[in-house]
Length: 263
Length: 264
Image 1 (cartoon, each protein chain N blue to C red):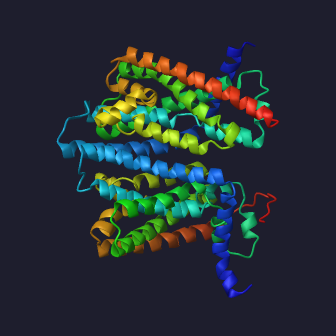
Image 2: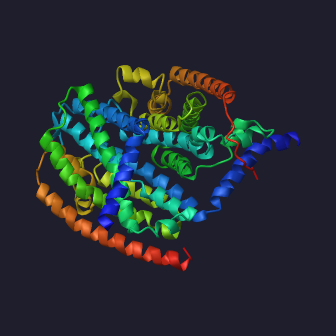
Image 3: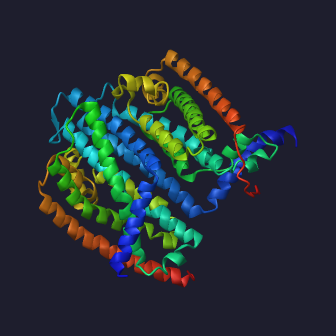
């Protein structure tokens, strides 16, 4: 295998996962449309809210739109394109990693890129659409938007990987992983200033949604280099921790003795 | 064994299965706790920022009561689409249809068996959380009684609508998208996140015409205003139940025929 083939293996794998899902064209389009509509309904909720209460701690409807544009794109990238990430606990529990561990490619990217979760692709459509239509894109703002998405996606990815790899240590932790992941997403979609006291500390440490729901103000509206640097540092640290959890956890993995084939 | 007794047995079996895994059920309430903490933070900030003691006719404790009521209903709601979609894809439907009990009635019994204990647990956890964090007194007995009276037809309405949508799996194989969209309509027009009293006038009129608010908003507002306009609510629910029940019967009859055509 040439170097180019080795590099191109991962995008080709993702493409084939996408093609596999797109084969069911009707369901593919319908699922994406349903998620776009879901995200849109949340914007309607905030429109209803801000039509009665125009400002909350300095936040306006456009900031919420930015929060959803950034958050949805980041979730779409991590949970949609890496479709096995939100199912990881289940795969570990059922001993379904064998097929990836027995192949020469690195197991983690291989299993993550092997499946696309179609519904979350709707988030990847919705986020940029909101940015382009509602948030006055200029080259500079587009750069900041992409930076915010990258940082948010890195945090979502590492956090989700950590909670799912707890299955290696706790055994049956799929429901816990699911609930904690949903909680992270939920906290990430509300304006950060409404959370005060101990909860705010929690949201910048254990459940790091605080970094994400501060992005519209500190990255997009009034870029704060210190916040951006701190968030980038945190994202790197969290990803390192996630990979450590994964590799340590793998040593505890027990095969499910399932016969599976990757075609 | 009469049909009703069979359905009661199904109800009892699923009711028990919910309690058989208390750890898993407790885990399910994590999201309720999270969403209530979020709402608590949001509405506390809103009342304080507006300097108001009442918004949309509700005090802050009443708003939280209302949101416990709506979230308890929706988070306990049955997931028909996944179950029926599985039945269709795996071919298990051919076994389900041969049971000596109506398929639709069976689904209602299963839904009630799973949803009702979850509703009780959600109400308990939500109320306890609000009480702990705010010191607000727990729900009144009259409020809970009125809520439960309105909940029964609300549950039947919700189940009729979502079972009808899930039955489209007979044609589509997967009704996830269509039920997902409907659940989002319930979120807004059913008053799950914001009470109808806070809607702009035009949207409130639309929401009042549709049956979605009878499934969530109607019962939840009984918690803060026990027995207020309960008769009117029950009458509206009964009328819509006849409409959605008829639609369910029609879709099921057509769906079964379509299945037979394909060789079921």
